[in-house]
Image 1: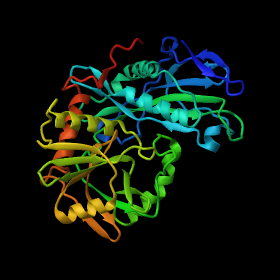
Image 2: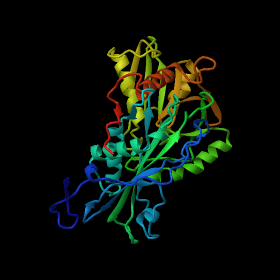
Image 3: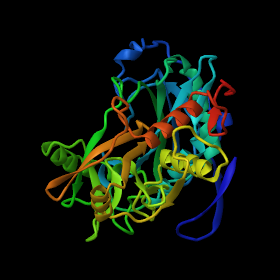
Image 4: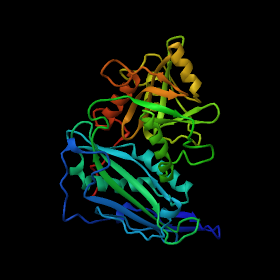
Length: 397
């Protein structure tokens, strides 16, 4: 497989090897690890026996994909990833149903976003279908690491870094795409617990024209100090605001949803527009799609309001302040790969807390968040047949 690209200096069209899953080599580990009991899994702390690596060079194109035993990477200290943050990543999950079928949830969305991120920081793009086939091989090789218990999964972390061995700000002549896997349990192992947000006016996550809409490593480290500041104030996460109107963008590392009740009884489910500030989350997109299908009557989802309106529009903090005051604030929740949904019961803003309904006692989330979680989990686990669940069992090892 070859693809066309343009020489950065001459502008001429040239052909270089593209990503090709058919030439992948597989080296099986001779020292398999023992998976800890599912109940002892901590998110992102346990890794499987194998990994996938694919080198890239600006002159040679994509190299041979290798699935091999999990091991440290060997990088020169001058590698561009260390000095100029040439780093991007994705996060998706594979699930195993009772009959042994392994499904990945919407991997095409992750591939598209990964290519978008790569293009933004001058790293190479690739054929997403080919990478999905390679990830299938890796997942099935490490199939024993996918917990079969309900709510458990195999977290997949595709990553790309710049590896050029030279200092100087410019496109990286070399890159490495790799994928590692980690078995994980339910995000809320002891039951769903709402989170408390601090609407920060001191820090900004992203700004127009910046990189907030891309999944880059450089977007995450700067959020650690604001997170610690929120924790000192007794809050779980930051609610990121933008501009003098205190426009709502994201919650922690998740996308944000707010539900309001309108005068005629209709419930409006709102999420901030993407622009180039909000990350286009896969779970965000899935939530919108499910809610819109329900609202249109195409696929009614138990638990969602009979009269539902779905909007992507600007939200400011005054909207929440007013809705709490007049009793029209229905619920607030975040969406993301790790937790799927995360309910919010309190937002600290300008010296006081906005109290948010959070469903019946013991549920730990509002009815809309619960309905979205139940339907999405059923698709991921194969309890409902859906094109979003991509079967991996057909991988050729």
